[in-house]
Every structure is written in C-alpha cells, then in structure tokens.
Image (cartoon, rainbow, N blue to C red):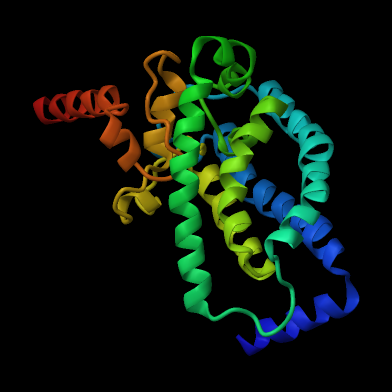
Length: 264
C-alpha cells in the first residue's frame, strides 16, 4: 500500500482533482477497455482458440472496424462529456482524493456492494430495453452483433449508454468513495463486461470458478436468441435471472446440449 500511496501522492501533486476524476478516469477507461477488448478481434481473425469459441460464426473485418469507429465517436462525444458533467455531483456526494488511501477492507466491501447493486439495477433496466418500442428504437443497436466480441460490450445507442450507465455509477454516488476505489471499480466492471461479450469460453474463464457469475457463455445466449425470448438480462451474476425465471430457455438449451453430448 505504501507504493500505491507514493504514486498517488505524485498524481495529486501534479494534477488537480478535476483532472484526475475526469480526464484521468477517461484515460484509464479507454486503456483498459481497448486493451482487454482487442484480443477477441485478433482471435476471430486468426482462428486462434477456435475450439473455445461459443459461436462458430465470425464477424467480418468491416463490421469489426465499424464497431471500433463508432465506439471512438461515442466515447469522445458521450462518455467524456458525461464524466466531466458528473464531477460536481460526485464531489457533492463525497468523492475523496486525499491520502491515506482507504483500507483494503473498505475498498473490497464497497466494490462488492457496487457489483451487487449494479447487477440489480442493470437487470431491470435491461429488461425494460427489451420491450418492443425501446428495443426497436434504442437497444437494437447493441444487438446488431448477434456474435459478440469484447468491444461490442459498449457498442450501444447513446441513449442506452446514459440509461444503463446509471447502474454503474449509482453505487459510488451513494457511498462517496475514494477516487482510487472508483478507478478500481471501473477497471473491474470494464473487464467483466468485455469478458462477458468476448464470445469465448475458456477453461480459465471466471464463470468456471466464481459461483453465480454469468460470463461469456451466459451472455452469448442473450445475443443470439430472439429479443422477445433472449432472457439472461443480468450484467454480472445469474441469480436475478434465476429468481425471475428469465434464464429458463438458456438452461433448457444447456440441458439439451448436455444430453446430446452424453448420447455421442
């Protein structure tokens, strides 16, 4: 922690709170998002790890490039302005940048709370987006990619970016965390959603080790099913879909595939 605090002191000495909370957050988000999302594009183009690909279809280079160009536009014209405009709200809510950094137990408990709350809010917002009118005019943009890859996780209509983005910021807004905690939460949330949209289920995928974690296989079903029957609306975990029965078609398919495998 001492090393982190010395690095943090350097940042707070050379940059203002506003610069760190807005431009700093944007740079971290973009770096983590594109660095974690690009590998699945490379895997599709080269055929590497094809045995772990959930769908056998692949996206064309043109469709991948379209996704990247739109993402750059959306991030610069929507995400960055929202981060800048949200700064006064987070300051009012108690966002902190001073030393010492919070204890690891505080960081851990807050991030767990953020994941649980985000999943709950996202689930209901996502279900609303699958109603007929909102799907047609808003959410269908995200579903242009029936075979998702990592970067499609944030490919969405600007209205959806704002609507579902609320689920990500509501936890931090309620607790007024340290900026260090907020950055860590942002990194973990980006890595989670990129993995869920990667299109690959590896032996080392988190869903193989973390109970109730959805992951790529769980969310991939959501993209390839009809919007009226897709289910699997949660962002991270599976329990909300299990409680409300919106994962029934997914588990039917899993049972069918398992029985077919046994028969072979």
